[in-house]
Image 1 (cartoon, rainbow, N blue to C red):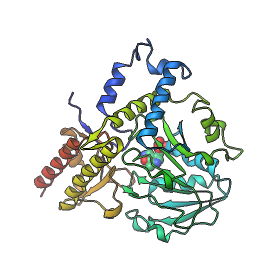
Image 2 (image 1 turned 90 degrees about the vertical axis):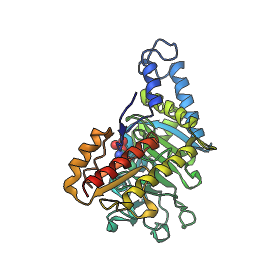
Image 3 (image 1 turned 180 degrees about the vertical axis):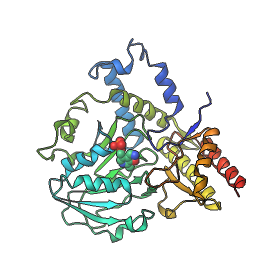
Length: 369
Ligand code: PMP
């Protein structure tokens, strides 16, 4: 089946093999006579799906044993409250603000932490650079430091996570990795907690992934709802309440798909990382070489997943989008807060999709020269 290429920022394209398997198993999962949405979360069928998904995720992201994997609900925005409810201990928390998502996170944390300290902000650059960690103003005794490791709207990515200990802080690092999870390996030695919605690189909306170091469990504020207390969720294998069973199933199929990926001698996430690097390079090169398109982000922190770009003549935006749709290139319109275009090149986007996009961009530029 020839499907169009879908550049949505999320919910986003899911690997076709995953959709096909889910379709084939919709009415009868593995001879059980039930579809996955119809099963008890405590039955042996769903438990086997859950256990495999968790084990595969641990393998593909190389999650060390001292970290717990939690499957939650509420998305990244709920985590903006759930993280401070669990980790702030009502003390000071540090934030690095590098775009809309970290901005939202620090605002929400003010409801739960006694003080939110902005350790660094890229707002003055219009969120086109990353502030150098060497210059961050870190609070003494902060409960944690939060950053968004890939800003989906501004298209800014931390290509290396900061080593807070080397910067003189004992605070655990919290990362919102919603929009680049599983696109590259994670350096867990630098992370205390990572969270992300599934709807970009892992599966459907409705599932939120939290990976948290064990020593950070058990410190929730008394007001924290039990279903959002990481210790309660961990003690109940993410089944304190009914988990998002369908989301876990599709994410599990996506994890199997990731583990099957090969690129030369590389496998799994490393293979995807190599592919993602090549896809992003091709699109950025096309933008930088053109007279019509431009991207505002400093070259050292450009996101490989979300690539915003603009037409120098904004009056051509609608024509650009209409032509793209005609060629089967979908959902390229930029986020309403920044305008222009945005191409999200998540794991499920093949190189052929990026090649089709850049061919169209060149054609459009020639036609409108
Ligand atoms: N963080 C980031 C980096 C995101 O991209 C998004 C969604 N685009 C969110 C948080 C919010 O996620 P949700 O809508 O699932 O709450």
